[in-house]
Image 1 (cartoon, one colour):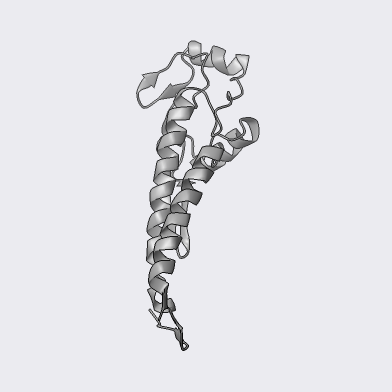
Image 2 (spheres, rainbow, N blue to C red):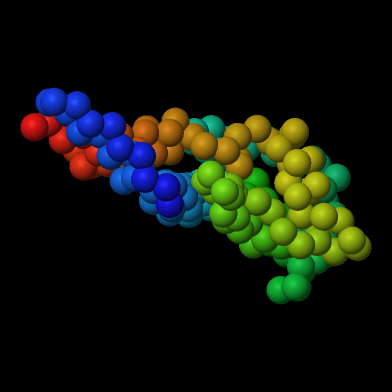
Length: 161
């Protein structure tokens, strides 16, 4: 990491203390927290902000009840609660991917018959808004954590003489 220093008679600024690895770690941790919270919400049929997810269509519920929709665990019966876990493959495919400047929550693999889990997730996002996004509670939690980390770095970064 390059070191950049600015010095004056009353102020010393050491930008070498800025470490992108800290922010990448923070991003990964907060996405993991968000993923867990979203999973809990989805199991209750709620989106990121706690609103009910759009119901499965009648024909899809009928197909599930008749055993036409299967997963690796076998046949599932439809629930009145839309929780996107009839097969479970799409939600289980969510992974945190580190980026050069942070992290993102992605879908990996396929969903039977070659259907890409990311494509299936995008389709569900069109129909059921907000189930794979940051909720207001996540944004507040992340902002609070970023503010705290920024204050710690600023305290080290700027030293008045």
